[in-house]
Image (cartoon, rainbow, N blue to C red):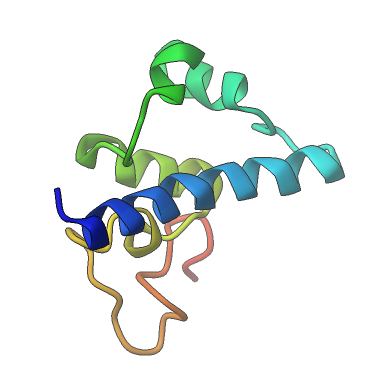
Length: 94
C-alpha cells in the first residue's frame, strides 16, 4: 500500500471513530467500538485491528452509522459531485 493509500485508509477508520465519539457524547445507540463490533458480529479486537475498513463492511457501516462510503474507502467509492465528499448514505439519503 502506498503512503497516500495508507493515509486515506486511516482517515476512513478515523471517521468511524469520530462518529462513535459524537454518538457517545449525545447518548445515541451504537456509541462505542464494542457496540459497532456487536452490530457487525465481530469482536472488538478484530475491529481494532483494521488499518482500513474492509470492502465487505463498508455499506453495512454506512447504513449503521451514516459515515459516507467514499470517506471510508475512497479507493473503491470515489467522491461524487453534490454529495459533500461522497455518496449519500442509506441512513441520510432521502
